[in-house]
Length: 458
Image (cartoon, rainbow, N blue to C red; front, side):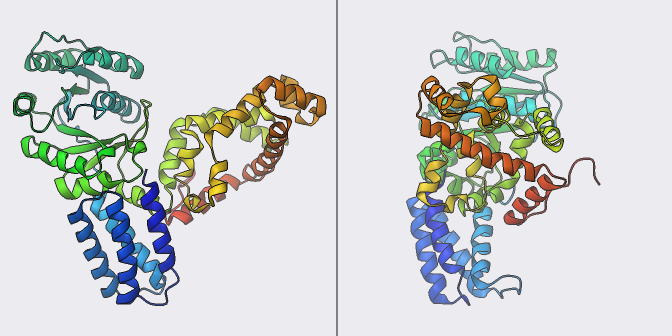
């Protein structure tokens, strides 16, 4: 997401970083590039105009502090204004009501609404520790109810059955009662996809909202539709009382216009962002973190949170103890690290959140391909248990056998063994006393924040 916008903005701001002072000429030149970058990203024209005016006013009217040079001050202003455009801070769901808290999901046909219902159910279950019930009031789309039932099974949410012969109002009324009997904390109500111009369908969802009085009404919108997403969200907001927006399919949007337009046009916060097809690919929308990603500063906080959730802590502690006892980091350990990386969404997802990685040369970025890591796993799987534990025994004939078994070439095996040696040295340094803590502090410093305190220490 934001690939083209990030490339354009980081190049423009890099040119400003060495300026001795901010003048109308150099600020004006930089802002012309920023304007073009935002328009190419399909950000709404009025949003671009207001953004440029605010940055210009602040840049030319601000006294630069001693801790920043003028170029850094300009980058800071652009970052703060990007955050402001997208909503200043994360706006969490308000579930403070007598259970079940009803969340009504609205959206256009094909926006990914039903999948988002499942993602949100999993998010609430795993991160908020809520018991979630789901129901489909979509009696129009063939197999809509069956799709939600299948997804509910995947995320272990309580599914309330419905049929295409029922009225949506009757389904909703029964679902609330059943959610109460099941002691569900939250009831997610999936509705039929509709077009903003379809007055009959809009009247139906208006009636559902009046009947259910939901604590949250979320509009699910396809991020790939750019500023049209913001305009559609506004049309729905005019008909319904929306409390927030979910940007679906954001991983497929290289431009990012929707994220930068929705809040400004609708006045409603973006609460979640969908970053993939898997049911766990839903993130709370943090404007400050996303602005940092757009400007190539990375997003270390989200990376740390993902590691907290997805990395097998027992396996990590076991590996740390092993190396601290003086044992070597072998290929079985390497294979386990590749699995953990895949659990976190692959190397592409991680690189997107590391500061400065977007500025790597194209040939270096090409090497950070998830396909290469999959190949490495296949090569390791083609070795015997003895070879994985003692890589030094792998001679020429063994390399040929491993290459044949993995469908690769001997140079691929050699490359893997070399990378393993490099990883072995790094792991030894990291697991020394305080090594991991120092590494995380360094990453946080690049982000401009505070390093998290190690658990167990106050």
